[in-house]
Image (cartoon, rainbow over all chains, first blue to last red):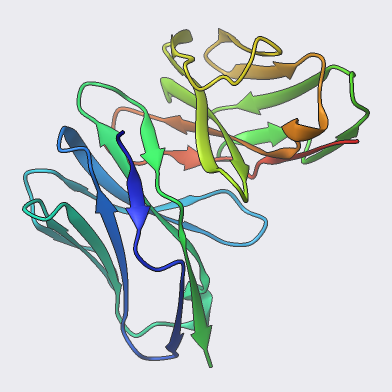
Amino acid sequence: GESVGLHLPTLSVQEGDNSIINCAYSNSASDYFIWYKQESGKGPQFIIDIRSNMDKRQGQRVTVLLNKTVKHLSLQIAATQPGDSAVYFCAERKTSYDKVIFGPGTSLSVIP
Amino acid sequence: DAGVIQSPRHEVTEMGQEVTLRCKPISGHNSLFWYRQTMMRGLELLIYFNNNVPIDDSGMPEDRFSAKMPNASFSTLKIQPSEPRDSAVYFCASRGTDRAGGYTFGSGTRLTVV
């Protein structure tokens, strides 16, 4: 069935290093792919999204890459900081629908 | 902007009791979503509304769950009767037309059914 999944459930990085969080998806009909960050005790927070007709989009310290050939999505965080420690979810929005389906999440831990 | 407001933040109830969770979306947002989050199942979409009309309730687990959106500024998710397996964090999110991909989530209601 349709699903969004993550390769790595946990990721530990040294403060100042770059982080890469990966995600695989199976629904080619999705028109948007989205990354969320969830800190403990809070709701998911929108980070960045990318439309399916793009392959790269940059934000502040974050870059999302989309490879439609292999149905792979990644989130790169530059100069990772302790405040980046959280669970990161990739999600997809299905074409012509408004609902967003979330993947299982990756826990990012930043080592000071 | 106060964001998406959910109440209560925490709810502890006994099995069999009725539970009502409340959500106030961001003013001007025309889509509202209810999600449930558990360790086992992650974030699951229960139901969503567009312009106060339920569009897709295929994620509602059972008839014990119901949701309403009587106006653009208020929605409820009701569980009657509640069961221990309903224990989870329930999130409400809203989206306006200005952001195609992402939602704004509330802080959630942590429900514990004992």
